[in-house]
Image (cartoon, rainbow, N blue to C red):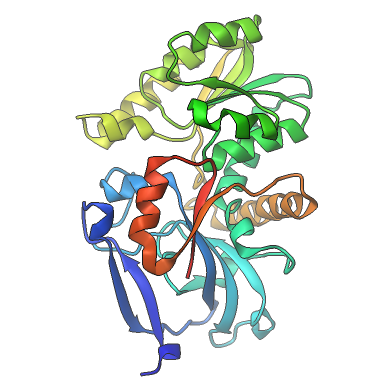
Amino acid sequence: MTTDTMITEVVLPGVVEPDGLRLHRRPMPAPRRGQALVQIDATGISFAEQQMRHDLYPGQPRFPFVPGYDLVGTVRSVGPDTDDSLIGTRVAAVTKTGAWASHAVVDVDDLTPVPPDLDPAAAETVVVNGVTAWQMLSAADLRAGQTILVHGANGGVGTVLVQLGRHLGLRVIGTAAARHHAALRDLGAEPLDYRDPATPARIRELSPDGVDAVFDPVGGPGVRTSYGLLAPGGRLVVYGNAAALGSARSVVWVFAKLLTRLYAWNALPNGHRAGFYNFWAGRLIRPAAFRRRLRTDLGIVLDLLRQGVIVPQIAARYPLTEVSAALVFAEARSRAGKVVLEP
């Protein structure tokens, strides 16, 4: 077989170090009816894959599997009785797994058009991250002039949250390691060191009446502090469970404890709201509505990227064949933004 008839993909065989990832080649898959074969121009390393490497991501497939949460690529072929005008168009998709590859077969209904003048790597930074930030901010029902606190403001979602927050006229306080503070100031955030025990007191100084929303990707014991920083009627949005990486307990136990705490707080009479953002909410119950909302929200975010409202934060670019080095770099969190793989 020629190179054009083979697909290259990254296989996660089990709980391994980054150098345990395997490159695998197999015959090019053929799309079925309602599907498209997408040549992947850019995919990324998110915290989800970092958790999957430790077998800590809820609902991840059994090992071995191909990671890769989202992609930007070009449609190369479509299945029988499928709109062939898609061939040659640039698209984005959220796959949850399977995108760390040179090609992927994706349901046509899961594809969102990408403006052709956008750099694929730039577009990749806002597929899952941008939609997550947009949907959380929209659900928080915030008004210009209010204050939000973004934990992990240097991360893939965090940097988009900062930029969208500033675009909406919000004051943004962001926590991150000190080495990221200059970059966060450039994005319009007021940075604080998450490792400094005086940070909660400093937040209270900056916003004496409390913050109107907190966005927290960590979970764990720190959510109690975040909840205590809310203004009357404020909202705590947890969208990750990074604390599970440092816990001796099972990920299910840690996640269940987090949800129990959040929902118990909602029963208190202080007007605060707390919840966990689930990107996939409604996917099984109302799949058509889920897809419509995803396409709409991703279209909005891609347009904001094209307008320059969102400046893509690319921490580094690596070829797919150097995925192990890319994962080491991503997990070191030495640079703000998202690590992009370019097959």
